[in-house]
Image (tube, rainbow, N blue to C red; front, side, top):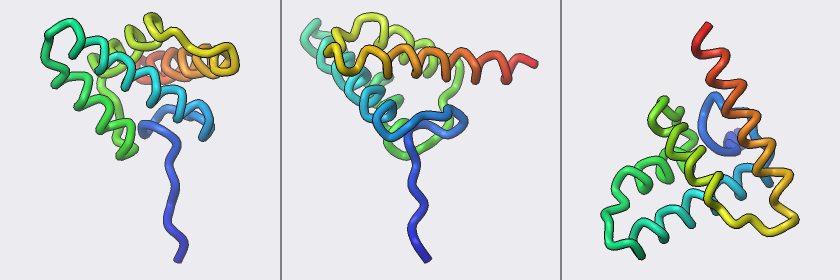
Length: 97
């Protein structure tokens, strides 16, 4: 039996590349929180959920959106950032129906 693979949090349809960009954006957010002298507990929880393919709650998605909006993505990753935002929006729309 081959192991199952996941690309980011459960319920958010991401490619492998997009999952890596999401991870990088949230990790960058963690580093900025630490640099500001704050505790990154919430962001680390979200990072763990992304890595373990666990579903993100509404507050998790809010943190991810904040991380994406402040992430200085390299040019090559900007399309992925927009795709992740779209996937999160689609997830939010389907959850509210």
